[in-house]
Length: 74
Ligand SMILES: [Zn+2]
Image: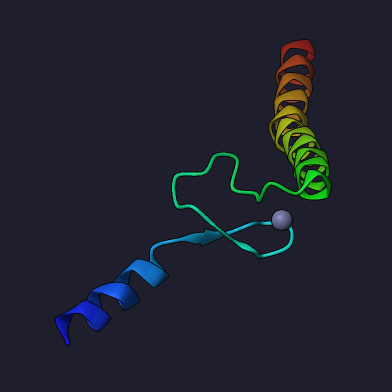
C-alpha cells in the first residue's frame, strides 16, 4: 500500500517542456524535451525575453540620463 503512495509521489516530481508540455526530468536545463523544434522555439523565446529585459532597463536609464542632463543645463 505504501508503495503505491511512493509511486504517486515520483509521478509528481517532474516538470514539463515549456514548449509542448511533455513531461521531462526535474533537473533538465533548459526545461525542454529532446524535440529539436522545442529547442528552436525555446531559444527564440529566450532571445526575445532577453531583448525585452534589456529594453526594460535601458529605457529608464536613458530617461534618467536625459533628466540629469536637462537638470544640469537649467
Ligand atoms: Zn517539447
